[in-house]
Image 1 (spheres, rainbow, N blue to C red):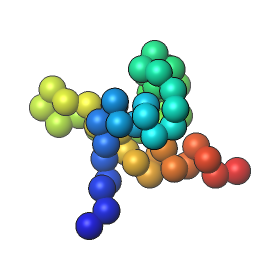
Image 2 (spheres, rainbow, N blue to C red):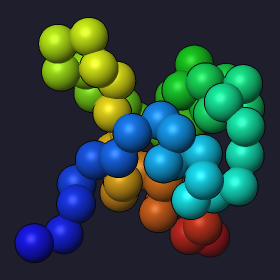
Image 3 (cartoon, helix red, strand yellow):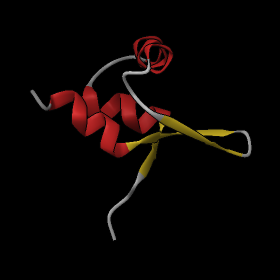
Length: 53
């Protein structure tokens, strides 16, 4: 089964940016996140969409 969500740290590693840049992408709505309890997870599909033209 494929992952649907990854941690913020994992998302940063996957696309090669720092946490500040990643949170900037969240604020702009470029990358989608969900919150489960106190944990923020990144929607993997939204990361993949960054690379699509």
